[in-house]
Image 1 (cartoon, rainbow, N blue to C red):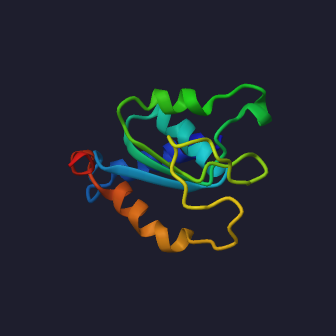
Image 2 (image 1 turned 60 degrees about the vertical axis):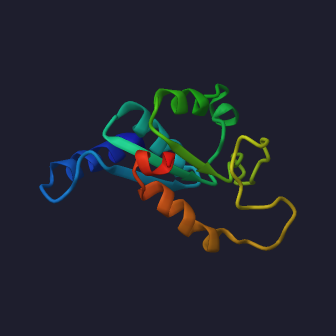
Length: 131
């Protein structure tokens, strides 16, 4: 249902004459990232997503990991996923292939200071990101 709500929002946006339907980007933090990823995997109108502190796997909740399959379903559209979490909202270190703003064991939270770079990346075109 929540993914469907996101898709309805995308349809509303793309119906507006002042919105470029080819540049829809979306951001979600926490569990909401799962719903955004579900919506984006099924809707090519969402050109790019940023997931922050979103669970990296649905296995714990659903006993079946879907997140990696949903990322694959995005195809060549970029997914920026920072600070992957488990279902207890704890950042999980999954290795060098993932981006982390949060350092495990460090009490300093630099997320707000680092958001600007990820916002710029989310808003940039795919061509700009490749340069």
